[in-house]
Image (cartoon, rainbow, N blue to C red; front, side, top):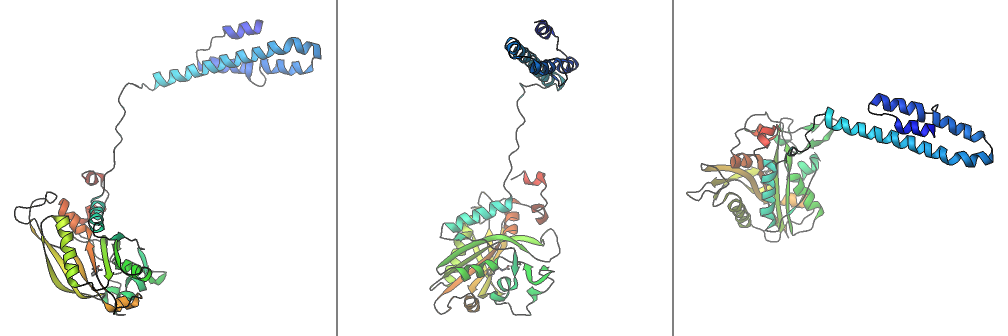
Length: 330
Ligand code: PHE
């Protein structure tokens, strides 16, 4: 009884007092545990007398200790850290989409409307898929160390120089009709400047079916530029790629007359956007498709230049520096 009065009366307002209380009553060598030790040694009849009050005493001390402890903790929270809990919370900053991603996503959306589906391929590629199956002669300059990052441990592997490797993978694994789109990053061993980088993005398009013609290619590209740039015209310049014949490079004339698309800022002009052509019969053959039965076209669109044009970005390096002051603007 005495002890229980003492415990009830104990003043526990500082951390020191709380700790002293714990030591005195509750710690291993404290009063209550030693009473329990003593309790073990007494006879059966006395156990009946002392058991209940002893347990009550223990409960009293523990509750007193716990409540003093949590009162102290709450006090710390509100006073020492000087928090104003009524203040509005900080806004969580929401990320933005990267201009390269926005352009890629829009292109995928445009081509998906005419039946193209997206295919992925490796960025570390073997010679077969990046060059040989694409009809690159063994001594073609694009295989040269100047343009290609080879993997030093394995001369057969390189960082892909274009997304055309996915063309090969598509034709090897799918049966015509094939309509695929392969967006992704490519690498070239080039000097970095405001206009070119050693890595950038392309979207590859491939269509293989019976009787696919160059007219289909041109109309598909016009559909694309009108969807993406608004009213536009395209110009096809004869070109050369080992994997297409005939081949062309395509420029788009953007910002036509007074019908400038709202997404494009001021100005007009020709912009080179892609390389394309009819898939070379040698490529079809190498990928297991009969060139006498099927034909097709392919194109590879450069993403960065288009993103730079659309968002008036003066330097290609801004697209990969991850400067939040730049990224936040999109
Ligand atoms: N792979 C070519 C390049 O990177 C582009 C291209 C793709 C050309 C498909 C024709 C057909 O320049």
